[in-house]
Image (cartoon, rainbow, N blue to C red; front, side):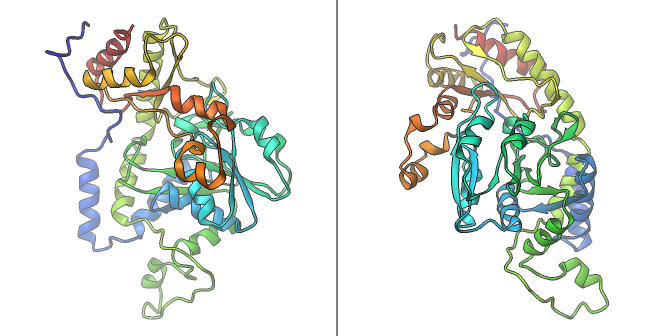
Length: 387
C-alpha cells in the first residue's frame, strides 16, 4: 500500500470503544426497571468479573482512581506513611496517595517493559513504607515475584491494573497478584462502562471494609436496605466513607462488555503480533515486550522510538502521522516531570532517567477492536514511510 495523504487520508483513532446494540439494550432494560443506582446489575457484574479473574471479591466503583483511593483507605494508609510507585504512570497512581495524606515515593522503571524497577523499589524502602503500587502498564503485568522478594512483611501490594483486565502473570490473573487491585473501564480500555472501575481482593475483611467505605461508611447497602424487612429504617454509619458506587446503568453495560473480553483480547493479541512482524525490520522502532510466562492484555500497543537511530524525533513522527490520519500518543507521563510533583517535591528529570526517557520516546499506535485489516495496513505503511 502506498500512502498519498492528499487522496487517501483516513482518520484512525488511537482507541475506540467496541460497543453496539447489545450494550444499548442492556442499559435500556436497566432504565425501564426503575433501578438505576447501584443494584442487581452491579452485583452481577462484580460476580462475573471476580470469577473471570479468579478472586473471591470484586467491588464496582466510579473509576479506577476512586478504586485505588478506596483500596489505600481500606488498607489504612494515612499521614506518616510512604507508598512506592513507578515514576512512569498516569498521574492518578500518585494522586491517590496524596488523597490519603501519605507520601508518594517514586521508583524508576525498567526501560524494556516500562514497568516498575524492582531494584529501585528495594532502594526506596524505609520503615515508613506501607504499600507499593506496581502498575501493569499497557496490559503487561509487573515483575510480581521480584517485587515480593524485596518487600518486608507488612508492606501491602496494591496492583494498579487499570490496563490489565484479562491479563495474567505465571498462570495467575491480574487482580489476584497482590493484596488488592483496581481496574479501569474508561473508554480507552479493552472493555468500558464509560467511566467506572473495579476493585478485587482475596481478603474478606478488606472487601467488607471497602464495601462499607464506598457507600459513605453505611453498615448495609441501599439494595440490602430496600429489600430488607425495614426499608424505612436508615442505616448506621460507623466509619468515614465515600460515595464511590457504580450505577446499575454502568453495571448492565459492563455485564455485556465482560462477556466480550476474551474475544477482544484474542483479536488484540493477533493484531499486536502482526504489528511486530510487519515493523520488525525498522531498527529505530522497538516493539513492546510479549511475555512468555503470562498474558498481555494489550490495552495499548506502545513502541519505543530510538532517538539515536530514528530519522526524526518522536514528536515529529507523531505530527506527520497525525497529518496522515493516524492518531498516536506518548505512552504516558513521567510523573516526576509534571509541574505539581516537580515543584512539590523538588524533583529533577534526571532523578528517574528511565521514566524520563520513556516519556520522551514511547509512542502508542492504534490498537482497538473496531479496526479492520485495511486500517492496520494503513497504519503500518504510514509508519514505514517515515524512513
